[in-house]
Image (tube, rainbow, N blue to C red; front, top):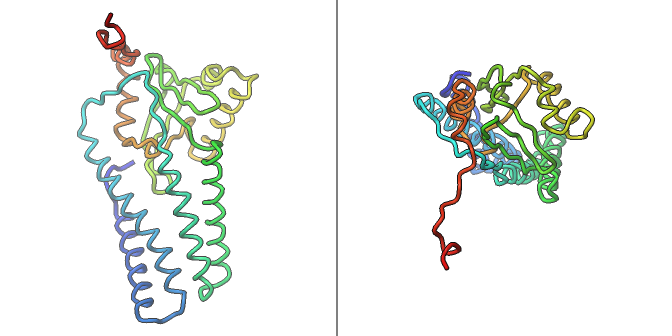
Length: 259
């Protein structure tokens, strides 16, 4: 993946920003009924995504200059639930406004808008009930552990075959291939366990969707994709650094140690 915004990013921002402005001008002029509200809402959401993508890619371009990445080992890095909640709320509110105001555009537009509402509601419901979210990443001396509320699996540093950053639907993603998928399954409990079967299915799905064994959207964890890739590569390529990831001992001499 080429770090830094490209022509496509600039065009998306230009087109979405232009249509957002046109919708607002029509709304101010009192023309088109509710239609301009739907146009401004849809393209306003697209504009926000375009701006976020450009900012993220600029940050990634700056990260290319980093020569060493330090990670606090054996401490789970949790996924940021706020990002998923923002997505759910945005889809629900934005889709609702579009469905309410999109009558002049057509029934098809309203149907798509209601679908966005449904996706947002389902996502928030899964988050509220704990059935979504809860993922963690943990850098351990043996490898990178992917965890969730139901279990985890370990990708040993020696099992990584290749690590790259790609663009997936305008989002920076970390992808990797491994030498032995069976080792991933075994680390989750084995092929005969529900957790092991889930890992095996996930690998098959990842290969179908993106052509890689492992797939991760680092922004869900608030991590720069380039820095994450550099960190993983450093522990894969330099075994001497893996000891840095051992759990750190607590400092003695605190109140609990005093007589």
